[in-house]
Amino acid sequence: MFLGIDLGTSAVKAVLVDDDQRVVDQASSALAVSRPQPLWSEQDPEDWWGATDTVLCALRTRRAHELGAVRGIGLSGQMHGATLLDARERTLRRAILWNDGRSSAECDEFERRVPRAREISGNLAMPGFTAPKLLWVARHEPETFARVAHVLLPKDWLRLRLSGERVSEMSDASGTLWLDVAKRAWSDELLAACELHPRSMPRLVEGACSSAELLPELARRYGIPERTPIAGGAGDQAAGAIGAGVIRAGDAFISLGTSGVVFAASARFSPNPAQAVHAFCHALPDTWHQMSVILSAASCLSWFARVSGARDEASLLDEIEASARADRDVLFLPYLSGERTPHNDPLATGVFVGLTHDTTRADLGRAVLEGVAFALADGLDALRAAGAEPGRIAVIGGGARSPYWGAILASALGHPLRYARDADLGPAFGAARLARLAATGEAPETVCTPLPSEREIEPDPRLEERLRDRRARFGALYRALRDARSRGEGA
Image 1 (spheres, rainbow, N blue to C red):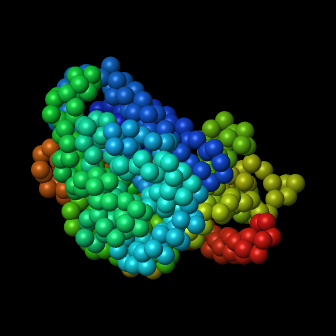
Image 2 (cartoon, one colour; image 1 turned 90 degrees about the vertical axis):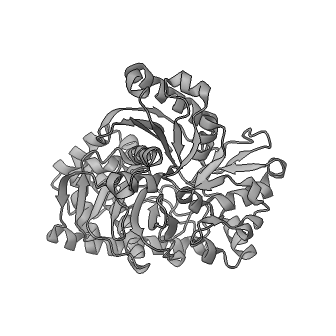
Image 3 (spheres, one colour; image 1 turned 30 degrees about the vertical axis):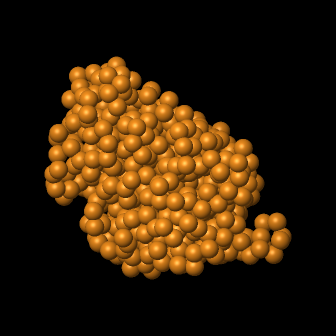
């Protein structure tokens, strides 16, 4: 057995996977996000630990025998979060998360301090990344900053609780802006820009290597063998790629989770920071990836289901599909948490346009699905500008359950999509695969195989033509509102 643990934004999820790569059992425990001020997004790390303990105890209750056969543990998690510790490894404040937008001014300051920052990190400084968050803390909470001895990413803080070791790996570390991504090593120059020293950073390993061992007292609590290795693991998107078998150049996937990601594996470091494309290390040695990110994807559907009074997302999707009014002229900008690729605009907001007395909930819901699809198409274009040429694209994540949304996505992107069976397992399954690689030393290509296809969706020529015009107006609407905001018109 191999155990994968994914520390997400909305939940901690754990899966038990056997030698035949079948999911034997899984458990999850919800997490809440604190938004004490506009643009802020935080979580208490102790809540991460409470949720992790809950899922592992649930698995032990149901699967004590299987937990006793675990040979490796893998971790994945939400990226970029700043978890600040003092010299005794105690947390100093709530963690500042990936979708926090407060540090725009600090992004400019970071790049001013290191003019070569984009060249070294391969990425544009954005508020979601870790480095600007530290500059914000230094400016606005100097007493806290003065006590910072260690900085960990969320899943690596969880590793510390599980093992007592401060370790990270290349894929997650790439999202800090402190890593020399081409060299796969911390950059003294980038750390110095935030008044940090390499000793503040965790030790680095590759994602498929052993990083630490489970603490004896936790092994006894959960019924897992003592000295069980914990793999380096991966950031959530790289872990999702491992789970989907996206490990070779040309392999790609779209993730429809809280955020939306277009991910393309690469054999080389290929940055395109001008269009807010992320160039990160993959979770396997000598492999990189390019990634476009929209901050709100399936979360847009969840939000609209809640505010519109729909019973749940599934019933809303059924309602949208049953409506024959596909030509309604409603547009939606899905920027509920600002945006990354390609706009790098933390102040962008969600917008409905084209409402009349005849507009129905289904009309608005369809606009939400199309708006997310258009934003992902913008991200795919940015990846292509960076040299990525993805073949057939896999779709994973909770939003991958809907064939109706899949038809909209394929037609908006103008690209065929492959829907994998068990596509919603995502990063936790990838973490279990990394646990297996760390425990057995097998070749990645023998373990990280593509998930079996459940269906393939081709672009619909008629829908593609209709969406092409709507996407053009979608882009024009964003630009008009951005320009009005820059003129101080309150848009």
